[in-house]
Image 1 (cartoon, rainbow, N blue to C red):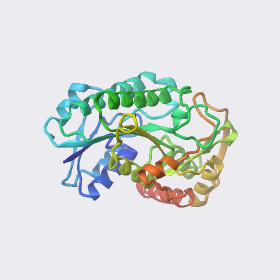
Image 2: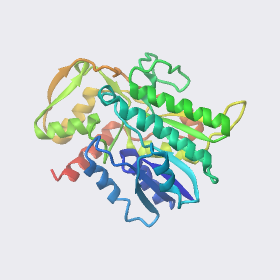
Image 3: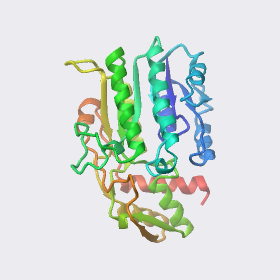
Image 4: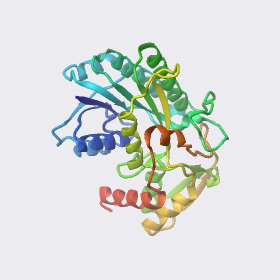
Length: 326
């Protein structure tokens, strides 16, 4: 049987693909290779996968339902779907809202409709985000908390994806699981994320920007932990029980909230150079702190993150230097 993986050239997607291949799965990877960030990085990730005999890649915009159907037409054995394709980024949603409607709403609808029509379908795991917690001040964030007040369009689309999935699970009995990822970082990471931005700037002797005068905290989750949580959800389809639809939502975080200045200090130590810092006000749609309550993820998925930023940041910086030949 085959796992359909959307966003296969993305940061989390490429790592999930590699983990699936390592355990002997056949993977059909889809990605539209858009230019939200450097496409050469996406292609480099794909090159690590395309030599594997069990990996097939097709470039397709999943929001185009006809193109999506054509891309999977010759793979009759798709039984599981990992849907990670999305338009990411809170700040970008302020200036390019249409990209989020197409990728995160139309794209998600295309995928759940595809699942409904797959004769061999067993499970869908899809990417939600810690951004759905909006301006919640109760910490740590629990999946049992209300998330009815998003403060960015990105967050609103991710919450909409959760609602859409619950509806399909309820109406058609389709097992679906949403994963609220918390600030995932690591080798092959996204260039718009803090670890990448700060490392690039410090190595180049350029200033870094700390919003809210640097008074911000994040639950930084190393990519290997995020991948383990994703596969755990894939291997444990949600069940219809006690009157509940077969739809669940889980936090995938490190269960540690780290000050942004600590991330900077760790990068400085690895690079051997102090950062030039400039301060800026809090950005619209951003939040001061994130912190994942993972007790339900532990209970249901056996999820247990193991990589602290003290271990993960040096691994990221080492990859960055190797990739950029620095």
